[in-house]
Length: 148
Image (cartoon, rainbow, N blue to C red; front, side, top):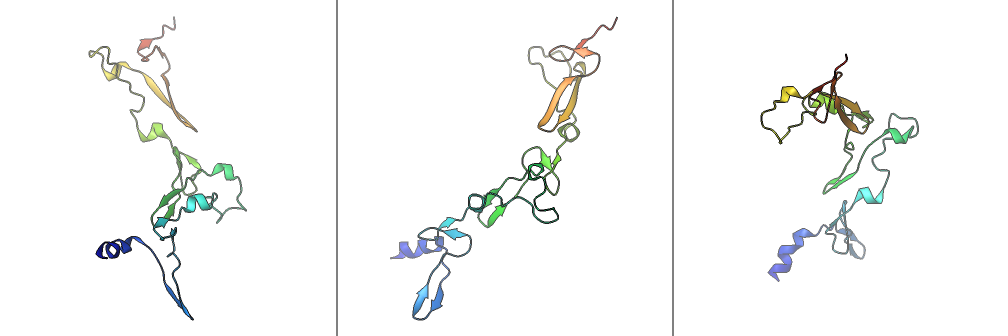
């Protein structure tokens, strides 16, 4: 029927002539009885995103922070959150990326300005921390410490 023919484009067969007859295995990257399911390389090979080139036999695997993202044409190995670099082994410096990351807006009073807050951003392996700049304290880092 015309409906069955219209849906055939959703199936990914790669027919091969054989003697006698033919075989229709799924095309590369596809699986399932009708070859309409994307192969999930991330599930099939748990270590697919671990780099092996230019490293000494998977040296310090814990230092690499790749994640695996399955896509229709295969997979991607983007860096995990807070990681960067060719091997995803460098920490992202959120403090450097976003200079006003620690600015907090106090909605309890509309009269205070951003300049009255004295936060300092401290980068860490897991993200960043916002602490009061030296000489300042309080919930919003807007209370001057009396050093006398």
